[in-house]
Length: 207
Length: 224
Image 1 (cartoon, rainbow over the protein chains, first blue to last red):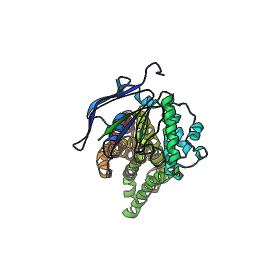
Image 2: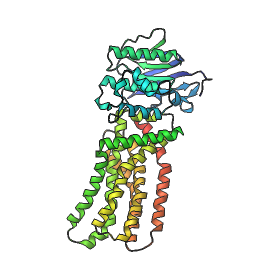
Image 3: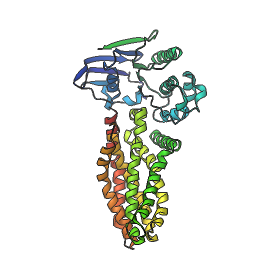
Image 4: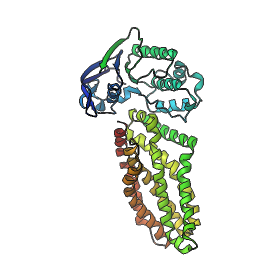
């Protein structure tokens, strides 16, 4: 739809104040196609707050977030971004397939069909299973499968490796590498060391 | 076209959830039936009194049943993060919210309509007012869901929002109660009720158009 414009996310002079405590201020960054932005910092250092500002859930106390040089509310930002947060965002009373169908209806279909995405995250035979019967790691992989079925350039991931085993982590890492190679960009927070070979990783340390 | 598809997907999802959960449908309906059947027991053998206050009983019970069911409108979506995903969708939040409200009404409002005639007969309401009762419920209960949605959206982020919700929403419910109750009563005495019905129709149209916007805005505030 907008392939002629090169996607770019910029944060300009961002600051966030919570309960009279400055979490971060005058934060600048620029994220281009194919890059990964890794937010590091201790618990409570404002990583999630920054992600929620980038999602538009929270207004920054100063500064602005720009998508392709436009403020995120005035641009096609929500066509291009996907967020996986602490909460899985899936309904536990619905089956895996029903959940993904709703996600698909809320966005534009992407590179992968639902069965292909399930195969990618190794949930192939679970499509008729209720989400409440899945393990925490499987739920996490399901919420990441959502990223694959919709066409989104920017992935915003809050602790994507929580409750995943070693195999799951390397699986997600390979999906992330693939996404960057295909012209996507990723912002994530993580406590794990991430291994993304041949991907341009920027780091911001919040303290 | 894809917006319409998303709209339908949300309605379908919420109806499916209601069927899987069941209590969501059963609670308000059971409350409605219980309150109405308790009145004759409390008042005793006074059929005329009962007949006279029947429109009021049915409408007050419907209103309280609607309020009781309001909290379930956004609660589970808020708790499991689905609400965030709905807000991040490229489609207008107000339209998706309207889909949620419609699904909620189908689950909690429509069943009241189905049992209301039975309960009206039970209270000895004159048969000529049954049609008007159904019409007022058909027009009035969606208004309750639509107005209530604004209140729930404002309070869903609070831990104990129940009390504030009723204080917020109840005053806005009063006009519906007055016009609907009055219409049913007038119909019972064979008087024309066009004016009240027209007012209810205009309330429905107004809230249908105006309620989704503040609801969407309030939800955005609540997830912050």
